[in-house]
Amino acid sequence: MMPTPASLLVVLIPLAAAVPAWLFRRWRSLEALAALIGCGLVIALLSQPATATIPVPGLPIQVGGSLDLLGRTLTVQEPDRLPLVMLFASALVIFGLSWRLPQGRLSVPLGLGILSLVCAGIMIRPFVFAALAFEAAAALAAILIQSERMGPLSTVGAQRYLALSSLALPAFLGAGYVIGQALDVSDPALQSAAYQPAALLLALGFALLAGAVPLYTWTHAVANQASPLVTAFLAAVVTGAVTFLFLEFKQQFDWFRGSPDVRAAIHLFGVTTLLLGGVVAWAQRSWGRILACCLSVDLGAALLMLNPETPASVAAVAFAIAARGLSLGVFGAGLSVLRSYAETDDFARLRGAGRRYPLAALAVALGAFSIAGLPGTLGFVVRWLNVRVLSGTDLEVMMIMLLAGVSIGWGVLRGLFSLLAEAPEEAGAAGRALPVLPRGAGASLLLGAIVLALLGLAPGLLAELAGAIASAYSFYR
Image (tube, rainbow, N blue to C red; front, side):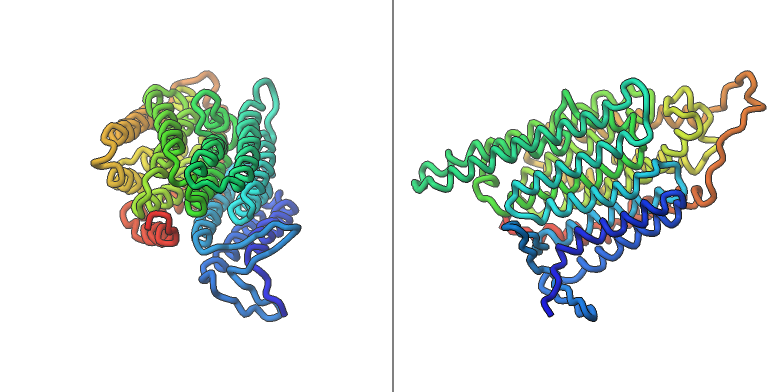
């Protein structure tokens, strides 16, 4: 019997899990269980070496097997295997945190569909079809962002997210055309110039997919309009997949890796995105905007780590993606509770809410301080890895990165002072019924906060995974 390629199962298992998740969407425990089982199965599958064949009775599975479909190839290559594990692990964390917390009814089924598509984008070749997979994922993400929202300006976040992804598609298609033309150039002296437009188009395409566009980014609109855990999912899973696809391009194409214009463009996008979040974070007056600033700072720092071609820089990128999923997931879980309390996330309107929901305040504080890089948190390890890569080469950027973390920390402190202050006296407040958390919501918040705190104090497990991911790439050797 011909073994089944694991790449097919990586795509199909999340889609299969989305079916019971949709059918049981009224029963949150069953919905979350379907998602967790699906993600767990893929993680177990991809934990095997790429050369392994898993002897499943009646269905042997070849981890590194190739699936050929209409001239397209879908393969789990060795550099892709552990990044895929990290993406599914990040999704598993966010799906687990969504258990018993107020979310949209379609968040888990659509999230599984998005996860399947972005993983297909990492594995599929030719790379032009990776852009199509990410565009399809963006269409589902737009539905997820807009889900259960109505009224004026309620579609801004979904529109921006879909628009940026749609603008990236012509860039990838144009790059594919230029590469096809450059293949006919036989003169080695002219080949570099022939590939240069393709390199610039790809750099622009990646920046658009990641949302690293300062004047029309999706981060603020989505963070304010979408569910906080949806925002965390898009930032951790989709943006993480875009980052790993960028590393795969550096692995595969010498002309892309060696282009000085690509380095300059990525540096520009990284610095501007970092500044976008860092300059204004301290002055924000709502948790949604703090979340958006956290996204901008973390994304800008990750982009800056893509330029150095060293094992340390790749490990820093991989570790940052894992930390982003945990930190934003815990932050988003706490913020979901606070929004259900006052139907807003303004600091003034949430004054005293931390006393009513202390676990939500704890989750928000730990998640936000982790993104800011407070010592003792998981985010501090990320900043330390970033500083180690940049030290001696780009001191100005290193200082901007550290000051951006201070700015986020100041904004978070202002929000926490309001959360933990004494609630103002309101007319009729005594007779107003406050929302009661669903059974088990407190356990989710507490468990997420504990895991985030423990990994901040003992990050060895994530560091080993990040190091293993870095060792699978060869473009820096």
